[in-house]
Image (cartoon, rainbow, N blue to C red):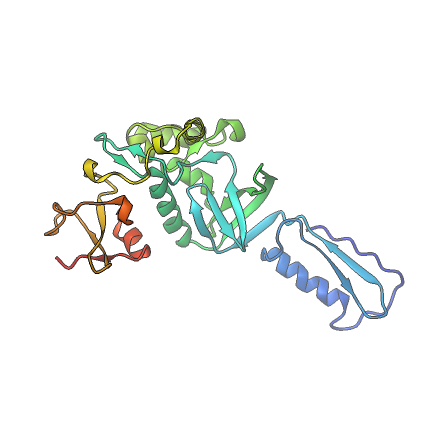
Length: 271
């Protein structure tokens, strides 16, 4: 944090005065309470003006996960530097060739992993074209978030921005065929480009498998809405699983885990 103090005249220090305020602001800044570009002015009645500015190079706090490469801390949306994770609507293939929502899987894994060692700290790198804070982030235990995501197969090294910083982790994940490397997929940046080229949104692949596909694999939990409007999910092996059909038009959907289903407001079928 950089501070500029302009005082018109010197006055004896008093407890609770400007020095105390500065100290408090320094603690708050270190805790990540001031957002990027914070600038403030303190005016003491009848006294000089104190100008405080900050580039807020570091933000620390509890996170909420937006997707596999984007989080939010203190209301600030933060994009991880140098990596790219599958989009929420993106489908990938597993080892058996069955499709699953790889973007949703990455976001879910990230959320659980960050929660295990909180808070998260992100150091500012730049602002992207959407105005987002782009940063290098670590968990409370010091583990680099980007390296973990790439090494676990939940994201890719993005050479355009990383200069190959995570290439080693990516090679290891690819060799072990974990995460997105277990089957076929498009790099996220190519997937987004393909979606932008689609003239008709109806031709874009749906993020949810259709009922006809009867998806089996990681996202094989069926979220059904009963005639009474109850949201009930069925897992493989339950009595009504096989006969349950999913209709996206009714608001029904597939889930990758029971935790995801419960978080969305569905309850487990009793049979």
